[in-house]
Image 1: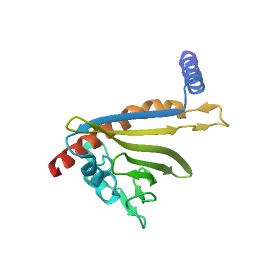
Image 2: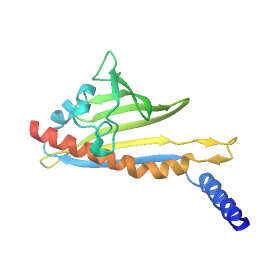
Image 3: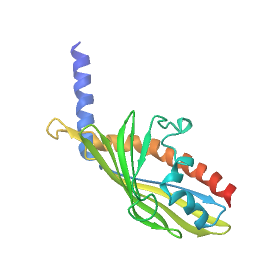
Length: 185
């Protein structure tokens, strides 16, 4: 029993140390080349009401939550376009801060779970390439989560674990976007 307690304390100490040494910043991006003009891609990306046709968040095949209910703001395209959502894992909101049919969209997003709000910034950018456009979906977030008076910083560990899962979902969404845009080109 004493050995088990020592092992648990050592593991706890390693988790605390790792949380203090790792960066709470989460930066990720995924890309795909779409054989369609940027304007065609922007029809899906620049209009929030078209996101359900390609985004991964509600698609069970991507590990998404099909219970998500989206509410749109007064504007659904262009700067200021807004949506909010609720689902089994919490709620959130997204607002376009930039929208250009040749360059892509930039947005502010926040996941809200109980009293905690995790803000992030995202982009879907377009870059002309031979035969189409390279679309890159990226996200930057700071995961400064801690408990016990800041002694246990678990945000950096969460950032590390979530990076792969969110990156996979981004790629799933980009692949769906590619199929939609190429079919409509």
